[in-house]
Image (cartoon, rainbow, N blue to C red):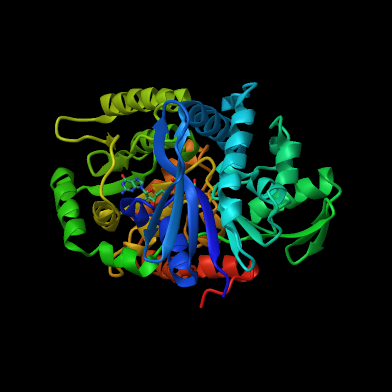
Length: 456
Ligand code: GDG
């Protein structure tokens, strides 16, 4: 049985980072196959970084490196998060095409590849993750590795027109074709990628995921990522979850809870969502005083200007909506710009009547799946899901909305609040089955089977 070698920007070398779905999936694969995990240590150093740090835990070898300030800025903050992230989320207007940042992106991809290659042995398979490392396949090949390389993109792959807006799109597409198996979150993303190869690179779609392009035969498929479904359901009935539910229950005082949980990111559609909630109070007066919307929005990438702007916009909108609709004994919209423990989140999901998952674009969106698993079968809440989240392909039995259409979202929240118990149960049962069947282990197995990795 060959080893699995994972490469991702952040690794699970820090045990506290192992709680996330991706970390769990990769960790499980590595402990079953034996293997190594390469990435960034999370530290930024002045001057040159020292030799990579080597950590061994439960038979898994981690090799992580510090970034210099210039690498962290050019590679991570600028090119990855101010160029690729906005373009791949269809926000070309927010992209900053600097003249040197792509160099930093290339150099970090190469530096990590050079760190990995000497450790690779015949029989190994490499699994690269996400938009930070689109060039990794190319640098691993240039370093002499000709064994299997898989790649999974956690964020959307945009339509060919939008991808072409990226000045370096040709080089990136060519480098991506050095991977053997490319995994996307949805059929939509996969088809965008294949269409680009067919239209712009003389690629031939041979069917069943196979594509001939640049003299190679590669596979591109959709592998929608899942969650640890059963264990999340258990979290939602644990003590910590119950305590959080009781705390928010005191605030609600018998009112219904409409909930949102998102990293504070412009892709998540938070201003549009706040406005839709305002519209609901406007258009459906019976909800006033009876419903409270709470948005949990832990700040992320707060060094990046667009994220600072979003924060200001949300502060302003929340103030305005509460000023317009609030009353002496009622706060219509609460927005908490902080992070809560995962167990507490599970408790909040469970007592919410409605969960709003309305990103403008999202690779998958795991909050939608977590909300489903946290529900009480006797009285499940209703999920409202954006048509632009990858999750909408799998969770089509829920209420699907266009997040730009505030009036329709407002109406849909009202409909969800009024939905009869029987319909809520029927819809929820179908969603639950999907989330349980297509969980994180299913995702990992499906991808590794195609990469031909034996993980028994
Ligand atoms: C990327 C893609 C894709 C949120 N607030 C808190 C908290 N969270 C957790 C949620 C969920 C996770 O963060 C967010 O996952 P998402 O999938 O919603 O979004 P991204 O962070 O943008 O992730 C996305 C994902 O990768 C996986 O492939 O689905 O499309 O963009 O698990 O629960 N966790 C805690 N406190 C919070 O306040 N502990």
